[in-house]
Image (cartoon, rainbow, N blue to C red):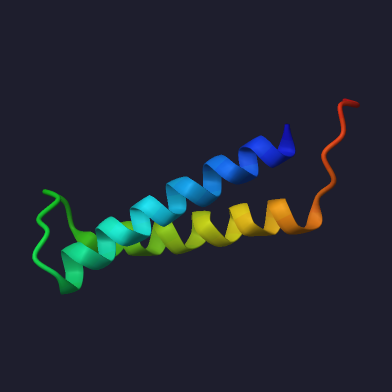
Length: 61
C-alpha cells in the first residue's frame, strides 16, 4: 500500500512540476499561477521518492 502511495505522489509531483515549469519559463498557460505548481510538485515528488526508497511494503496493518 505504501508503494502505491509513493508511485501516486511521484507521478503527481512530476506532472505538477512539469506543468509549473512550462508555465513559468515556457509558453504553456495552465490558467493558474505556475509557482505554487512548482513548489507542490517538488514537495510531492520528493515525498514519493522518499516513500519508495525507504519504506518496505508489507500487507500487515
